[in-house]
Length: 164
Image (cartoon, rainbow, N blue to C red; front, side):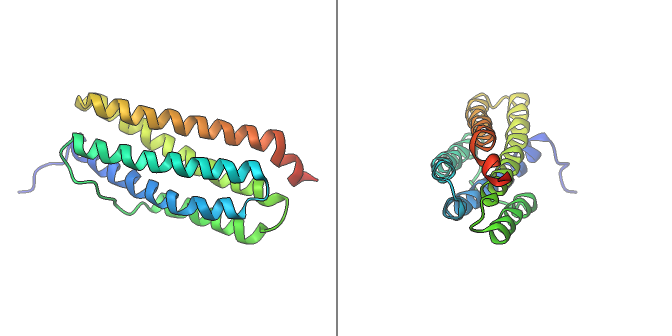
Protein backbone atom coordinates (compact mmCIF):
# COMPACT_ATOMS: atom_id res chain seq x y z
CA UNK A 1 0.00 0.00 0.00
CA UNK A 2 1.34 3.44 -0.93
CA UNK A 3 2.13 5.76 1.93
CA UNK A 4 -0.32 8.57 2.51
CA UNK A 5 0.93 11.91 1.19
CA UNK A 6 1.54 14.61 3.77
CA UNK A 7 2.48 18.31 4.01
CA UNK A 8 6.16 17.52 3.34
CA UNK A 9 5.14 15.89 0.04
CA UNK A 10 2.94 18.86 -0.82
CA UNK A 11 5.78 21.26 0.05
CA UNK A 12 8.16 19.39 -2.27
CA UNK A 13 5.56 19.20 -5.05
CA UNK A 14 4.87 22.95 -4.84
CA UNK A 15 8.61 23.71 -4.78
CA UNK A 16 8.94 21.80 -8.06
CA UNK A 17 6.04 23.84 -9.46
CA UNK A 18 7.56 27.24 -8.62
CA UNK A 19 11.03 26.06 -9.72
CA UNK A 20 9.61 25.26 -13.16
CA UNK A 21 7.72 28.58 -13.17
CA UNK A 22 10.80 30.65 -12.28
CA UNK A 23 12.83 28.99 -15.03
CA UNK A 24 10.09 29.77 -17.57
CA UNK A 25 9.98 33.38 -16.37
CA UNK A 26 13.76 33.71 -16.87
CA UNK A 27 13.20 32.67 -20.50
CA UNK A 28 10.20 35.00 -21.02
CA UNK A 29 11.63 38.23 -19.57
CA UNK A 30 14.09 39.05 -22.41
CA UNK A 31 11.23 38.82 -24.92
CA UNK A 32 9.11 41.12 -22.75
CA UNK A 33 12.03 43.57 -22.46
CA UNK A 34 12.44 43.59 -26.25
CA UNK A 35 8.73 44.24 -26.73
CA UNK A 36 8.54 47.10 -24.22
CA UNK A 37 8.35 50.64 -25.64
CA UNK A 38 9.60 52.60 -22.61
CA UNK A 39 13.22 52.49 -21.52
CA UNK A 40 12.08 52.29 -17.88
CA UNK A 41 10.03 49.15 -18.52
CA UNK A 42 12.83 47.53 -20.54
CA UNK A 43 15.18 48.21 -17.61
CA UNK A 44 12.65 46.86 -15.10
CA UNK A 45 12.32 43.59 -17.05
CA UNK A 46 16.11 43.25 -17.36
CA UNK A 47 16.56 43.87 -13.62
CA UNK A 48 13.85 41.35 -12.82
CA UNK A 49 15.51 38.75 -15.02
CA UNK A 50 18.66 38.99 -12.90
CA UNK A 51 16.57 38.79 -9.73
CA UNK A 52 14.70 35.78 -11.09
CA UNK A 53 17.97 33.97 -11.75
CA UNK A 54 18.70 34.55 -8.05
CA UNK A 55 15.29 33.10 -7.17
CA UNK A 56 16.15 29.95 -9.12
CA UNK A 57 19.45 29.65 -7.20
CA UNK A 58 17.65 30.17 -3.88
CA UNK A 59 15.16 27.45 -4.77
CA UNK A 60 18.08 25.13 -5.54
CA UNK A 61 19.34 25.85 -2.00
CA UNK A 62 15.90 25.01 -0.56
CA UNK A 63 15.89 21.68 -2.43
CA UNK A 64 19.35 20.96 -0.96
CA UNK A 65 18.20 21.87 2.55
CA UNK A 66 15.36 19.35 2.40
CA UNK A 67 17.59 16.71 0.83
CA UNK A 68 15.82 16.57 -2.52
CA UNK A 69 16.98 16.95 -6.10
CA UNK A 70 16.13 20.31 -7.70
CA UNK A 71 13.65 19.54 -10.44
CA UNK A 72 10.72 21.24 -12.05
CA UNK A 73 7.19 20.04 -12.54
CA UNK A 74 5.17 21.53 -15.40
CA UNK A 75 3.18 24.46 -14.06
CA UNK A 76 0.05 24.96 -16.16
CA UNK A 77 -0.74 28.22 -14.35
CA UNK A 78 2.49 29.97 -15.31
CA UNK A 79 2.26 28.64 -18.86
CA UNK A 80 -1.19 30.23 -19.16
CA UNK A 81 -0.10 33.54 -17.63
CA UNK A 82 2.97 33.73 -19.89
CA UNK A 83 0.87 32.82 -22.95
CA UNK A 84 -1.44 35.75 -22.15
CA UNK A 85 1.62 38.02 -22.02
CA UNK A 86 2.74 36.75 -25.44
CA UNK A 87 -0.72 37.41 -26.82
CA UNK A 88 -0.65 41.02 -25.54
CA UNK A 89 2.81 41.45 -27.06
CA UNK A 90 1.60 40.23 -30.46
CA UNK A 91 -1.70 42.11 -30.51
CA UNK A 92 -0.36 45.47 -29.23
CA UNK A 93 3.23 45.38 -30.55
CA UNK A 94 4.58 48.83 -31.38
CA UNK A 95 1.66 50.70 -29.77
CA UNK A 96 1.67 52.92 -26.69
CA UNK A 97 -0.72 50.41 -25.06
CA UNK A 98 1.78 47.53 -25.24
CA UNK A 99 3.62 48.65 -22.10
CA UNK A 100 0.40 48.84 -20.06
CA UNK A 101 -0.46 45.34 -21.28
CA UNK A 102 3.02 44.01 -20.50
CA UNK A 103 2.85 45.45 -16.98
CA UNK A 104 -0.53 43.81 -16.42
CA UNK A 105 0.89 40.48 -17.61
CA UNK A 106 4.02 40.89 -15.47
CA UNK A 107 1.89 41.67 -12.41
CA UNK A 108 -0.17 38.52 -13.00
CA UNK A 109 3.14 36.62 -12.86
CA UNK A 110 4.21 38.47 -9.68
CA UNK A 111 0.91 37.77 -7.94
CA UNK A 112 1.12 34.08 -8.81
CA UNK A 113 4.67 33.95 -7.44
CA UNK A 114 3.73 35.85 -4.28
CA UNK A 115 0.90 33.38 -3.63
CA UNK A 116 3.24 30.41 -4.10
CA UNK A 117 6.09 31.82 -2.01
CA UNK A 118 3.72 32.88 0.78
CA UNK A 119 2.31 29.37 0.97
CA UNK A 120 5.73 27.70 0.77
CA UNK A 121 7.09 29.97 3.53
CA UNK A 122 4.15 29.07 5.81
CA UNK A 123 4.55 25.36 5.14
CA UNK A 124 8.34 25.54 5.66
CA UNK A 125 7.67 27.15 9.07
CA UNK A 126 5.22 24.37 9.99
CA UNK A 127 7.67 21.69 8.84
CA UNK A 128 10.57 23.22 10.78
CA UNK A 129 12.67 24.14 7.73
CA UNK A 130 14.02 27.35 9.32
CA UNK A 131 16.72 28.05 6.72
CA UNK A 132 14.23 27.46 3.91
CA UNK A 133 11.82 29.95 5.55
CA UNK A 134 14.48 32.68 5.35
CA UNK A 135 15.27 31.93 1.69
CA UNK A 136 11.60 31.79 0.67
CA UNK A 137 10.85 34.99 2.58
CA UNK A 138 13.70 36.81 0.86
CA UNK A 139 12.22 35.92 -2.54
CA UNK A 140 8.69 36.78 -1.37
CA UNK A 141 9.88 40.26 -0.35
CA UNK A 142 11.62 40.78 -3.71
CA UNK A 143 8.50 39.72 -5.62
CA UNK A 144 6.46 42.23 -3.61
CA UNK A 145 8.93 45.03 -4.37
CA UNK A 146 8.86 44.18 -8.08
CA UNK A 147 5.06 44.28 -8.04
CA UNK A 148 5.14 47.71 -6.35
CA UNK A 149 7.68 49.10 -8.81
CA UNK A 150 5.56 47.84 -11.73
CA UNK A 151 2.50 49.56 -10.24
CA UNK A 152 4.45 52.80 -9.84
CA UNK A 153 5.71 52.61 -13.43
CA UNK A 154 2.17 51.97 -14.67
CA UNK A 155 0.60 54.84 -12.76
CA UNK A 156 3.33 57.45 -13.29
CA UNK A 157 4.30 56.84 -16.92
CA UNK A 158 2.82 53.99 -18.89
CA UNK A 159 -0.96 54.19 -18.40
CA UNK A 160 -1.09 57.89 -19.40
CA UNK A 161 0.74 57.14 -22.65
CA UNK A 162 -1.56 54.20 -23.36
CA UNK A 163 -4.65 56.38 -22.81
CA UNK A 164 -3.42 59.15 -25.14
